[in-house]
Image (cartoon, rainbow, N blue to C red):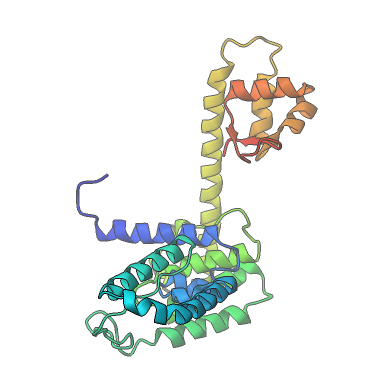
Length: 308
C-alpha cells in the first residue's frame, strides 16, 4: 500500500482497469448493450428496476403480506419504524450489490435534480445522450463490414464526437469490446492504446479522416506486434524456469519432452501427455508434479495444465 495520496493518473488507471475487468467478466455483447453502457458510465439502473422477475414476484408477495399484517403491527409500532425501515433498505441495497446489481440511490429530503449539473464541472451544451446515440448509429452502420475497418470507423467517430465529457478513455475499451463481440479477439480484450501510443499525435489527430484511419490501422498493427513480443517474452521466461528443473535428470527422462509439449500447446491434459509421451496416467501425473505446472480447470475429473 502506498502511503502517498493517489495521483490523478493513478486514479484514472484504476478506473480503466476496473472497466476492463468488468467488460471481460461479462458476455461479449454486454459492453455495447444499453445496460452495459449505463453501468460503464456509472449510471446503472436502480435496484428495483434491475431485480430479476422471480425477485419481483417475491417482492410483490411480500408487499401483500405486509398490507395484511399492517393492522396487527400498529400496536407494536413504538416509534422505531423509521429506523427499522432504514435498516431494511440498507440490507436490500447491500444484497443487490452482492448480486451484481446497481444499488438504488439513497433518497434525501432535499435532493438536487439529476438534470441540474454544476456548470463548473459539466458543459451545459454537451448533450451526452445525443452524441452517444450518434455513435451507436455508427455502430449499427458498420455491422457486416470487416471487423478491423469497423473498429477504425468507431474509434474515429468516438474521437470526433467525444460523447462523454469525463470518460474519453472509454471509447477505446468499447472498440475492443466490439472486436471481442465479433470474435476477432475471443480470448482477450485488445489494448489499443499500446499500439496507438507508437503513432505520432499529428497522424492520430490529423484533419484528414483517411489519415486518421490509416494511423489507427497502423496502431492496431503495433499493438499486435507488442502482444506477440510480450507472448514470446513470457514463453522464454517460462522455458528458463522449467529448464532449472531439468538439471541433474537422466538422459532418458521424458521431462524435457513434456517441457516442449507444454510450450507448444496453450494447455495440456493427462490424455494428451499419455499419447505424446507414451506414458501411463500415473506417470503423466508424476511428471506434471515434478515440473510444477499450473492447473487451469480446477476440476478433479478433468484436469488441464498450462504456463500462461
